[in-house]
Image (cartoon, rainbow, N blue to C red; front, top):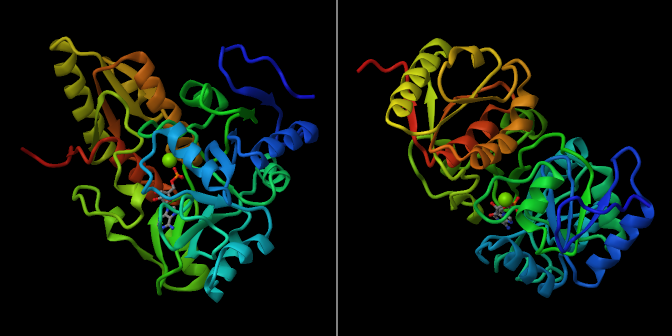
Length: 362
Ligand code: AMP
Ligand code: MG
């Protein structure tokens, strides 16, 4: 059995395993906990999820309570087969099936009209349901052992960065869940792309690893919700959860955009001023610029050419900023080719839309 004693004290049982060698017996036990109405946190390819039986209204209520999440913020239902999709939806447009054929299992969530099988508690009272078919093997085995339908928001307390390791989950929810499956650090590190198929053309409600261009190539026009498009203006987004100030570190975070040279010079200047004023400064940057900051605690997300690394490290480093107790944080902007929309969406929210343009003279 892959069950080990946690080195941290918490109420939840910790089950350790790897995606290459999932522990069947432990997953069966975790599936039973879910079937009986309990909560199990588990790894997916995006972030760790806080799972409950999606067809059990009481389990959904427990998820909201454990996260401290507002109950108008609907949950994503995770499935492990395409047959399961038919049970919980009313209408599946052909374009959605095409996307499913190309990107499921994977980091893509699609929204459909819900069937009567899905309780209102799971969808925050909406008549639509968000569905994802994760590719992580631990996740798909657990979903099968749980009966096929697991609602799972990110396994963080509401308002904190999403967890990318089991240690993050223990930190936030160690006493609030029954079981935590530790499958090591996740691959992607940012939540799934969400596309709404209850409208035509479909609309992206949350950018992720599967970007607008990839979807347009597969099915034609896919629009972007205006609520997530603008970095500087605050427009009310359509996904209920996207309006909350998510992913926020405790310190005030400001993004400094512009050419790499201008941004680094501006951040170094700001860090100098803040340090002189007695404040503890954190800097989030890339390998290329990490040597350009003589003052402040410097965290590199990785090389700019490795955008998957930048994405994978973002949430862990926002958590490290909290632990280090910095007062202010300055971050470079990361408009990388595939993941830029997703990375900047999370960073801009963490910064509460505070952005300085270092190219502006003034
Ligand atoms: P999380 O559970 O932390 O990954 O967040 C789930 C996101 O999906 C939130 O932003 C929700 O508002 C959004 N969502 C889930 N279900 C729906 C739905 N039926 N319609 C619109 N947005 C949804
Ligand atoms: Mg979340």
